[in-house]
Image (spheres, rainbow, N blue to C red):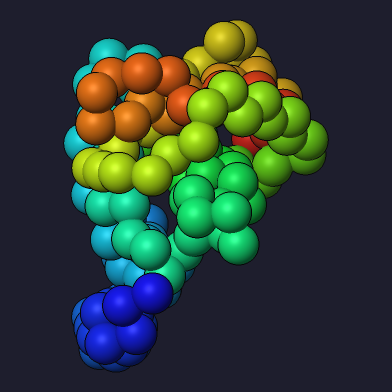
Length: 140
């Protein structure tokens, strides 16, 4: 693990984060970049070894976090209010070892109080790495 890079990333996140969408601490720590398209929030991110599991691949919990973030940011972007994850199911299809990677959150069904979303993660070669589905309580 590149400890110097990990420390630099952590310190940069501490200095530059703001507790709001796209700039909160975890987004800064993971190096997330956001863009939006019709029915989609695309999150690109580097694959850093300081986020690897003992098997030498990007940790599944980090992938789940990025998928959750892509869906939550899409809700905020489209609705103008935050949503709250009620349930999430993830499938990990292949290991992620090199980046950059990309993730896209999209609506399956948008409701007034409950919505269903999904998210996909692709590696640098555009191979599907993970897929997640979730149920969200829409913000009031």
